[in-house]
Amino acid sequence: MLLLGLDTATPAVTVALHDGGQPLAQLVTVDAHRHAELLAPAVARVIADAGVSRYDLTGIVAGVGPGPYTGLRVGLVTARVLGAALGIPVYGLCTLDAIAADVDAGGGDFLVATDARRRELYWARYDAAGRRTVGPEVARPADIPVAGLPSAGEGPMLYPGLFPGGLGPAFPAAATLCRVAAAALESGDPDKLLLAPEPLYLRRPDAREPGAPKRVSQ
Amino acid sequence: MTDRPLVLGIETSCDETGVGIVRGRELLADEVASSMDQHARFGGVVPEVASRAHLEAMVPVLEGAFAKAGVKPDDIDAVAVTAGPGLAGALMVGVAAAKAYAYALGKPLYGVNHLAAHVAVDQLEHGPLPASCVALLVSGGHSSLLLVPDVTGDVSSLGSTIDDAAGEAYDKVARVLGLPFPGGPPVDKAAREGRADAIRFPRAKLHDGTLDFSFAGLKTAVARWVEARKDAGEPVPVADVAASFQEAVADVLTRKAVTACREHGVTDLVIGGGVAANSRLRALAAARCESAGIRLRVPRPGLCTDNGAMVAALGAEIVARGRPPSTLALPADSSLPITEVLVP
Ligand SMILES: [Zn+2]
Figure (cartoon, rainbow over the protein chains, first blue to last red):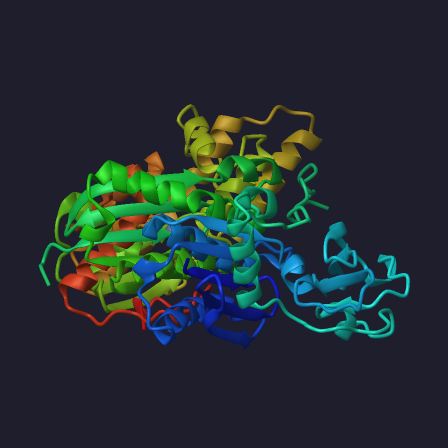
């Protein structure tokens, strides 16, 4: 197994190569506005660093968000086109789940919240076993039922007053996406655990239907 | 490198997901998926709607283009993509796709200028461009006059709209007349039944000594005229308004294009962009070019609107000239200047 993992649903552009047992190479750059420039060189770089060929890849796993749209799409179109060109499957994983997979909440429920811009957050709730029980949803920070739970993701850092007890990590790790995907593939039923590489936008596009033309004469 | 390179072109600067494949100046495939139907009820292209549609259409359109061309992805010599100008989020989908494709296949990547591609596409229909030409590009997004000594690397702006693009004026006039979006085809159709000299609408900037355009005043003049009729309780002569409006647009565009050719001693005019499909613009341009001794080149309508073939056509010309490719760090630039034909 040789998996390429990538996620662009947060300010981090994270890419990793994984053999199913361990990561072979990974690269993270945090820059919310340059996903389109950073991602392809990062993919080329981790594959070169691992000393493998792109033709040896057996699958791709991409974070499907939720996340700010433009960056999210850069990751998903990259994953889809690479998969089509190389003739390998492309899987999706909820970005919040990837963050949750790296959380050590000490045996209780916890939240993951990431920046949705426009003063909103994407969020989900997880149980002690790390299973998502609520969400993903998009909401104003004050409307999220935090209920005193510990939380991970960039959300608690952006709104520290609302979230007690922030846990790491702030961003998803591509190596974790690979690890989760590898386990799902080995379980023999990956479709139950993995998603299609379809974006989770959670919001409709901003657009209003126009009314009657406005008068131009006095 | 061969002088007839096999090049894939990807275009996503507005609402069309286009993938074209050319061999030199020969068109092999030109697949387009448009999200226009999804924008119609908003009366204009909604950038986020366009970007979402590009993501969904990209792989199917790519595969469709290869099936149509009858070539294998491994056979291509290069991948070209529109790097700008255009809608930022829409451009990024195409640029990311082109990088992934080029990297997966191990082929060079060329990020090119959308406006130069509108000029280069004419080579697929009318053969090599002359040593120097003037290009008039008119669409919902652009209204430009360009001087093109070399479409692969030497293009400069002679003039452009100072407010609305010509295509935007069509959309707004269509709305005032109760015609559907996009406004170009229905206004053109209505105009055929009307008299072009029925109403004298203003020709802004016609004698201002520049090669710039302005269509905002014309659009407002049409709206005001229609309102006055309605206020007076009289019916609106839709065909006459459409024909008179269209005449004003075509008059200004063609006069300035011919003036640009004269001022720069150029004898070839290329017209491109969606508005180049307009029947009155084509007819008036043909008549004025003929009397001015200018050769007119207008590609067929399918090549005038945004498409992947135009990007592939420009890419093929750039590859044949041996220009260095772009890097995988190629940015999408929504306001890419026309002087940058190829982005490093
Ligand atoms: Zn265009």
